[in-house]
Amino acid sequence: MTSVDVPVALLGYGTVGSAVNRLLVSNADEIERATGHRVRVVRALVRDPAAERDFLPDPGILTTDFRAVADDPEIRLVAEVMGGLEPAGEHVLELLRSGRSVVTANKQLVARRGGELFATASAAGVQLRFEASVCGAIPVIKVLRESLSFSRVHRVLGIVNGTTNFILTRMEHGAAYAEALAEAQRLGYAEADPTDDVSGADAAAKMAILATVAFGTRVTLDDVWYTGIEEIAPLHMRAARELDMAVRLVGAATLVDGRYDVRVQPAFVDRHHPLAGVEGPFNAVMLQGDAIREIMLEGPGAGGLETASAVVSDMISVIGTTGTGFLQNDACWRELERLPHGDVVSPFYVHLEVDDRPGVLADVARRLAAHEVSVARLVQHETGEGTAALHIVLHECRSGALGTALAEIAQLPETRQRPTALPVISDRGVPGLGWA
Ligand code: NAP
Ligand code: HSE
Image (tube, rainbow, N blue to C red; front, side):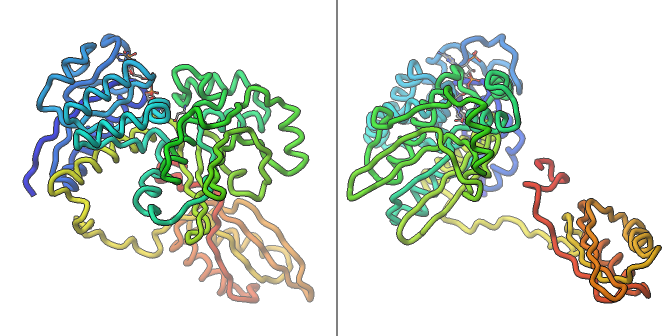
């Protein structure tokens, strides 16, 4: 495939904007291999070019002059990651009118002026994509617009604000509201004005966008009834714990007999409900419809890199559906080898049936240790007639190493049954992959 250069511009180079550039630079080869295009940031609009940046752009990229973007005919694709209603709104409209496709992370803009923006994009024959405006890294807009466009989704239930979910989770563990909010701001989850987060306005804008896409009717921020978490106090946390529930800021969009309701409010969520398990800056969206029953998407809802992944994915979608595009082609571009079966790493549960006498535990532990397998927890139950069942939870280890150790343990004279091992699913990931 011949490589073609795609110069792009960013409106904003803050938490999200700098992470977009970081992703485009660090994944340039992968993006080129997949799309045939070398995507490069050539301009980024900021207020103060001298301010400290998380990821430095090339010299001369930062500008305070919007004309340097709008008047450059080479730039056909722009990501708006500056936030606010103005000047972002007028900039996006001008870019669309002049034939540029725009990708935006700005939920307030899309939720308030979506009708005008989409009409302008349609009239100009360009694309306006907004995946990053809702739920950070979770590709819920693509799922709703592409995979479920015929599915008659009639309910969307979600935790759609990372900052408030982070604060509520921290409060659950005893932190004070103000302390948790300050931490969310420091970690880059909160809006420039965190009032939007804690008042529910940010979640309301996202629910307006989700309802618009799910129900196929324009729902604006004014159509959403919302309250925030400012009134939530430690007494609510205590009560929820006693009732085996969790406090969450929940958005609900419902379609009933051709009429819709969209609201955001703090709710007591039963501990067994999947939304109760959504913690920290994570978001989740539950989609309900006749044919699909229920689909839940969960992932990081805020954060620079997480949100940037949605921005970059939208940029790639614009490129992939422009001209001859590439998204209709075979997705395979490489041949990977299978990982050897025994190299998979996991914590495990092991069941042993052994003689109940001195030295048996030591024998078992020695065989495990010889293969770098380490015990995390152990429970012993007497099973009668001098035998005992050992229920052992192991720290992460290679499944091959565990298999070898268990084969040796099976040969011990005190072992009464073939040992069994099952993987344990507890943490959210694998430390070795860097995100657990
Ligand atoms: P941010 O860190 O405050 O960055 C905003 C950037 O826009 C800065 O580079 C700023 O310039 C520039 N900017 C703002 N107003 C400007 C103006 N009038 N003229 C020129 N440049 C201007 O904000 P962010 O967290 O990256 O958020 C950006 C957008 O992404 C917002 O719409 C937000 O809602 C959305 N979003 C954020 C997250 C998140 O986790 N942070 C997640 C999802 C969506 P200076 O750097 O010079 O000040
Ligand atoms: N402030 C927003 C949040 C950023 O906390 O969810 C993601 O849209």
